[in-house]
Length: 144
Image (tube, rainbow, N blue to C red; front, side, top):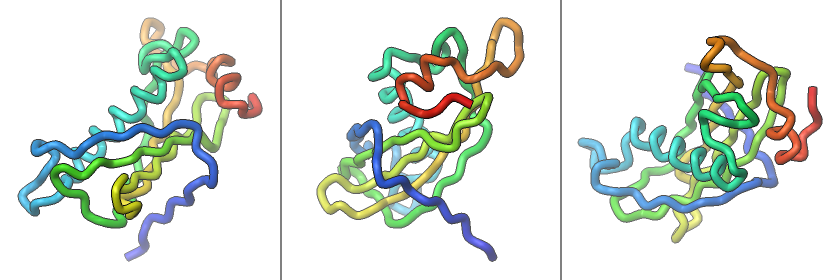
């Protein structure tokens, strides 16, 4: 079976730390895949907040997650502190990918790498819109 491969950028725009809580642990005794997706969501919200955005208002537009890919590298356990590094890549007219490198803060072990594809959306009009200029400006990415 073919495996997903995610390349991780050399430089990240944002870093945050989130501890693994007991409700993130699955029946296997380690971080559950559903919980990792929720922790990525928390990291993304923190990243947006740092830039004075919310998921519902980035230059007047909200976002929709279009796809997710996660490649697991190691287990995470209760009490571990995960370091989430975030970058934006692959900009297009309507969105981009948000890339995550997730490591154990204490050991430096890579736990996972992931990406979420986003598009910008006008929730009142119920339609996809172009990427807001302010989102490009804060990323130093070229507008398409």
